[in-house]
Length: 330
Image 1 (cartoon, helix red, strand yellow):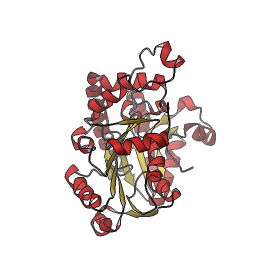
Image 2: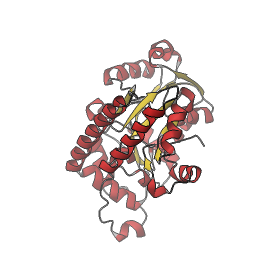
Image 3: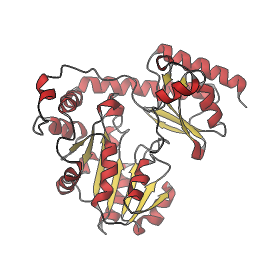
Image 4: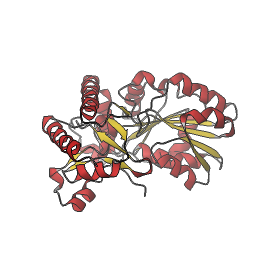
């Protein structure tokens, strides 16, 4: 298992601080979960039905012609490599580590490449995987550039896989409306923007032929009945979407300003997190953890990611810790 954020219980045991006393900024989730409405008893008592309106709600929300619900986009990340013969796969890096790992595990030759290297390697690849906006750097690539890469790949039967887990705040940058094109696969995560990671819901946007092949790999009833009811309600709540986008944008800007104020300017980020490289990343992570604030540490490039505080008490706790850090920086 690769390392991920959100391991609060592990941190609580390591640092001897009760779980309830932590400020968890490690997972890049919106810290304001959407309300969970009434879920009828039949959703628990019967096998899930696929004509309940979830797919239509997702198509409307994402602006996509076709969608396949999956139990979290992680499921699709692990299964997509099974749909191709072994080949050469490029993964735009640094990014979410599960992408490269999934293709390697299924016998593909994987090269992790930088943004400026894509044009050099692209014509030698069968698949290019891009996280957009990127996690953890926040790098955002234009639809035009991505579609240019897709056009070059599809000429040789290749794929462009775009993980848009953090795209909800910038829907006009999404490739969802073009996702019916052969060789273009878009992944969307439900849990991050809606603040409901425990629901385990995601969507794959692609041409129908590929979605049918992937559905065979996923198997029947993969998304539970209660999840389908909750997911549909959240996807249709347009007023709540607007509120979530506004407060996450405001909180992200506030976080950028606060980090800069205390000598930790972010090198990248998006509406749900900020990312910075520092030679003192491990020290900063430990310093914050000893004060009950959990960050996401990336040891391979000495960087940390800050999620968004949910309320004024959390902002105050973070600011006090940053103030203390500036006095004790090695």
